[in-house]
Image (cartoon, rainbow, N blue to C red; front, side):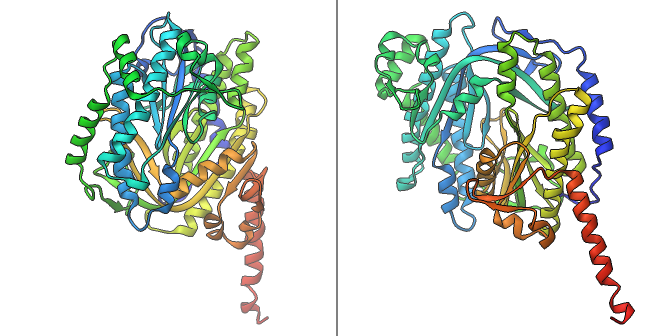
Length: 489
């Protein structure tokens, strides 16, 4: 990563885990019964929130990004910034839905108001998603995207999820744990507004009758723009397609093509200074580490009527020690948390690509040990294993979206591929692409074998001890051969 000698060791990580576990001894879980400011949620006071979770994604974004040439990624980043601003305004200001964050081009939002009217929650979330679908036609026209126009789809589910904050001081994010937040993302397809039966059953009868059932048991719904506007007006929600057009035209005028440029990283990235006007470009490994099966674990605990306090304490230790391992132990840049997944960027400002790639594997091995051995020993629970995907490539790092609510983003085909690889892995596996593997020494390359089902090079159960044993063996081999010239052999 960013330079200097890496400081991570299992003993320090174990101490950190114990400290974090002890810090949450007085954690209390309570239920949201009225409108709240989610920014005020504290780590020790997570809240159970009933609502409709929606994921709204630009489904062809990564494909378009991979097709871009040279520095065209900067234009994609500019468009993403302006898109995220307009979507935030539609969702929050026009429909009163709570934005959680953008995961690159994918928005996570939750409609939880009115707390006593779940039907209105569902209608609010569905109409907001449809409004974004209608806005994208205007977006494509205003920015003259032609046959490279963006496509938007959404997935929605209803249920009770746990809202919490995680991270260190000044580096915390709002998170939702639970099946509704997880399943909404999983049912999202390349086109259309899809919802679970739980969402559909809350809609007005006339809208339920217009939904179409898919083979997977989800339901899709489409309404023309005039009807979306009409229904929004009836509910007191002010969105109009014409309003989005005016806002986008103003954005296009104030942010012309070529107005966003990037600077090559020459020193450690200061995350707090990132903006569209201060975008960094760096050769790096994008890494995603996901706690495999943790959402199902939370749901099972709640279904059994178990107190969720210990489950949340476990999550905070897993996430906190994982974050410390990446940021403090290996000088990586944490981009964001995405539910029970962490996204980081591993790099070296001096462009030592081979060393950065080498340290990326060290980081993945250390994270595996944290999840498999250190956290279970401290918390006294079964292990919750990580699935880790990592890819190498030139990457843009910035923030996008509405002023005051901007989200960190790393933009590259490597980032997109790493996320895809991670999603195909099982817990206890590390998957990497060919570009990252080719930067590794040959003895480390052999750890990762090609897996056709994952479409990546995969290592299973490769933890810190495995890495250190292999590295020590290689050092002994190098030492043995290094003395031969001196011995006249």
